[in-house]
Image (cartoon, rainbow, N blue to C red; front, top):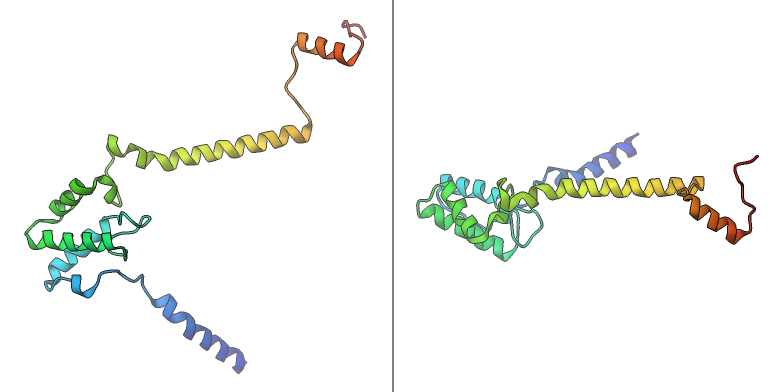
Length: 166
């Protein structure tokens, strides 16, 4: 019993740092603003902006050089006196709606919003077609032949004609 308890404690000791850790933010100390209110606003804005290099990661979480440049740009705009919306509009004007982690619903972004649903429907259709084909193969059913096709097949195979008489 004591040995199991020690193994459990050792295992928790190894897992605790992993479980207790939060995702490391990529913001470097030299990027941070001395004003805590502005820094909080910068962090809030950074969580809404996509790193253009990384896959679906905010600039606050990304270590990419472009994300660092965007974080600095956000802080510069805040120091210049822009409010949060003006900062986001400024960055969207330069990089497009794709820079937003949650892009607005408008004609230019319909493809971003519709693509998951379209891909899901296509995947369901592919699965349906696959299973339908498998079912046909298992039962050995094929599409029925027209009368002309059946007569031609009978001719080729040398099968006597069935004139409807049994």
